[in-house]
Length: 308
Ligand SMILES: C[S@@+](CC[C@H](N)C(=O)[O-])C[C@H]1O[C@@H](n2cnc3c(N)ncnc32)[C@H](O)[C@@H]1O
Image 1 (cartoon, protein in one colour):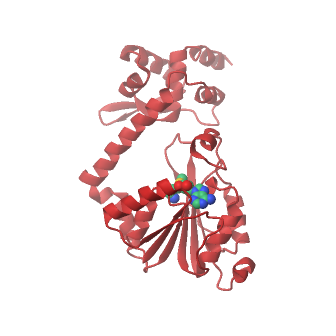
Image 2: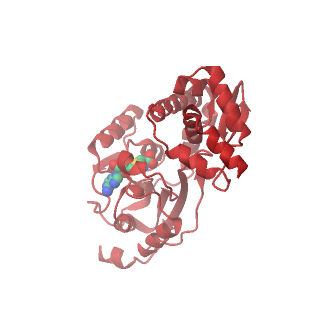
Image 3: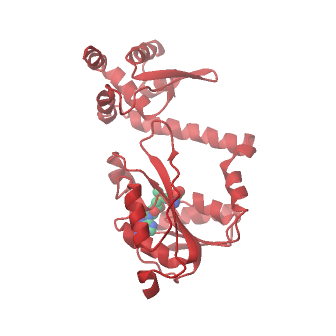
């Protein structure tokens, strides 16, 4: 009780609340916090020390920098306080500056991978693993700007990349041209009703697209219909989360999908077995955690597929 009172008192300070909100969103060092909130370094250090004393944040040395991240998780007694900080208003626009900082950080990381450490690049690993597969006809559901499409096209026989948005398809097309990939057919269409022949694909991939559509069952039925017998549907989705803002800002229809619900819908579409599920965590504090489910189209077509 005493520690809760003390914590509430500490977070009565608006600057400290801003700092906790930022650290709840991303691991940051002192210089980064200073640049985000525009308060002097000694003051920021003082606030960080207070938050650390309350066991709300922890520090960790990485190279020459000390980084701060959340120390408490959902089970901690002070978690409601962290939730309070996370959902508090952002009158100074800290979130926007944080996004920009993270984007710049990512750019440096990408540059490092591309220019300095090619052996560690996931692009190369993706191509290496893909080269072990036979040449497959692949359909990419909700290809977006084509990041995944391009990786698939490096080893696939052909990729049909589908998205309902013409502007993102244009970006994907331009990226494919830049990379000299000529085995991609781009298609502007609704995943619920596709102008593609049944039993024409070996692999259908849906990466973070299902949470954008209202009628998940209709999309899965289309995926199953397109598959040849023994073809695979691979779905990467987000676990259920509470980030309501993604509906208005990113156009999500669902706040993640319960794996059991997805599996039941895949079974109903005639896809079995569904055994694989790999949780892939984006970052320790990220509310977005992903999982994979794969399903195989039975040799004998399921009711809906038979009719198609
Ligand atoms: C989060 S992006 C996924 C991008 C990509 N698959 C990846 O993993 O990087 C979701 C995409 O699905 C598309 N989408 C959403 N609903 C759709 C629908 N009903 N039909 C076709 N595309 C849709 C959106 O336009 C968006 O580009």
